Length: 374
Image 1 (cartoon, rainbow, N blue to C red):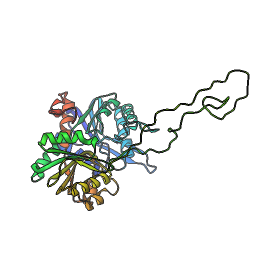
Image 2: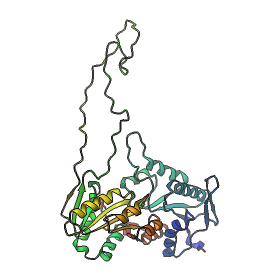
Image 3: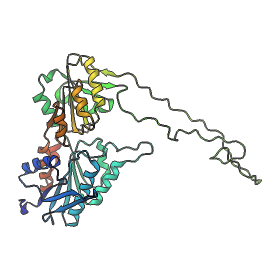
Image 4: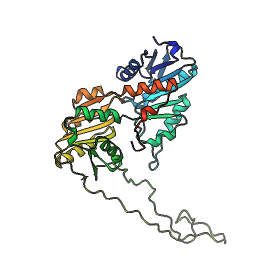
């Protein structure tokens, strides 16, 4: 059982075996037992949490890995945090290695910044601190009203490259789009390797749908309303306001060039690095181009292996030799479907972060040699 005098408990916000695996590895490293709680779904799909031990006046760490059912995982975390808050926990720290909705952190047309909404919900539920890893955009930390420790998985992935990829000195680091160039440059500089950048039609972009915001400005015609041309007003003898037609400069439409690789990959091992690998079509297309340009082996390194939908099958049938991801997200099923998927364990750094936060020690050691661009 947990030792009361230690002053902290570690809980898992999900009771399924796949999601508690990381939590068990963390508690083993800390030398404590996983907190006693039950998280389950009612017959009507409502989430219920029962905490089975006292948490009064203690630091509580909730580990929540995000499976495919993202929204259920969020509700589990919110309900558990609120249950611990109402049971008088001193501090409630969320350990969320992969932060969901992190791709929805920018305003797009008539959408919303869902990531900020989630940050507000977590604060309202009672969380006082978050430990996460490789946020999709570092600026997401500004959405929170409490501290956020954004850990890095790159030391573990760099170690894998050095120890598990034969002849890695003959490799070249590849960014599959210009937006990933900074991350790729960081890997290349640390490994003393070359850098290649891909750009062209394979990279994702927001589609320009006709949503009404491209309407031309109204033109005045006779006595009409300024905002509705053609809507006639009864003549009252007063001067009706009219505005001349406005002609604004039109932004030229983007035209994507064919896929181009800036850098020589011929006769080299190509290592594509990114933070998230989910839908793999872009990675498969990039691998085919790199093969055509002469790369003889292709690796993909990513922190979060979501690997949704048909990702395992597409990887297995592609020119990709190996996909290396960390265990921030459960993906055991995908590994059974595709032996090319390999896992790097990051429980060590998460356990150390928990220990340091509880003991009030500096977190600087976990960020040594980490720069702004990492």
